[in-house]
Image (cartoon, rainbow over all chains, first blue to last red; front, side, top):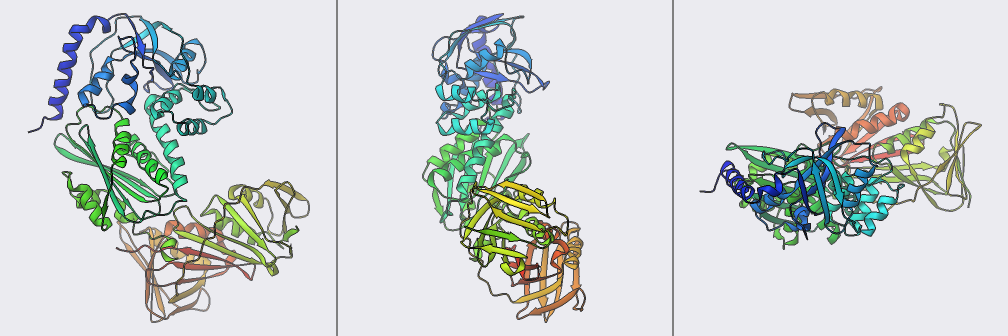
Length: 385
Length: 248
């Protein structure tokens, strides 16, 4: 019998409190000294006056791993949650239009640094470590309002620095340029959120900047694959991590994409789905950031192999995924699936059978909650050439 | 290189640009000694527009070598809309790769051209079993009648009779068509045919061409694309192809 979400959550919290009692004096205090991975965070509540600041762990040295989701694959939920809880988040309330001034400029230098940066934060009050976990937000360490912040010198990544100083470059072009020069998506997103791109610069809450970055990159790659020939067979890819089961079905079709999600809420199954064709989605997806993160993972594959396909992604979220750790795990989960050798199916129906085999939801149930069958009734002109 | 084309009024060009705008944002036109053509599909490849505008449909037409020119349809459209109904429109291409557009006697626009990205799109090869010719206003009304219950129009012909129908979550509708001299000129079928087509594509193009076309001709076969012919400038035409929805 596997543990329920509540039990897993309780166990992780108990461990966290045990750690706190050992190292508590580092974290529950009115100051912190450590190396920021580097990491900046922009809150979304009370927009347009948002809580902005660095995240700093009570450790000096190479802390890079603590805020680099690209390097977290293969780790357990507990390990990942501990990365997050180790980061003390300093905040100051700033208007989103304020993208200059010493404080923000320091954070921008932090965001573009290629190495962790020694940081000293002083808070008005002792930080609180009463962590609350829920299904919506990713976990944090303690939060403290910053009285003063000092950062050691940084060495900026040159390509980011160049886009930062180019005030004629549109934000989306900046994102694409950095992506194509090999900068990690989590790094681009941090710079995006701290108002470093575009002509009319603004601070962007972290959660929105994650979605925007995935959306910009995946949209651009989708435009590119529209010119590629169709895949010649149905292929299935899958990956499982952190209590998430992903199956990706590629089939010979003009670009069309649907993601269907299923989750357990108090033992009851819930479903959500969104889709698009070559015109794009045109509205915010109901399944939110996961839609774009997953799309990015699959269009990277199609663009690399210079093929076009219709895509269905099934994601079953098991109760073991007790603590949401962020949408990065969807992107990396799909990327890992697409790195494996796909399985070739005889037909689209057969592919969906295989895709749902390891899941607790049947093919017919997935199909009845999604729209893909309705969508593929629409033929294309090319079917009649 | 000489290229110059002048229309006698502005309605036909407005109808053409407006029809193209329902499918694409950028369009590449081809001009030859015979006239101007355009062919393009929407991003999903569900619909295709094929336009042929022969030289004799223009008041003045001159083209001594084949040229391609690309425009952003929204930019071109804005400019053409500045023309009154009776204004002639004259287009030519400058040395600086600008489109020169003279509206009426004295309005001279210059518009930037874009890199033309035209690939050679073939046309669907299908024998059409059924044919219905009706006024575009009648067709527009029928689309409206069906849309209140459905997102799709089903066209059905049998024994040289026809009905249009639609079905949705809230209910269904069937409209029987009878041949009359005024609005419905022709219903013929070599074979009984039934095809279902998305209103999401049909509505905008029928509205875009509007009454300029007068009568339109719908041709289709079971589970095959629909082709609608809109006549423009007497001898020019817009062919609108729409892929069917098919139960698998």
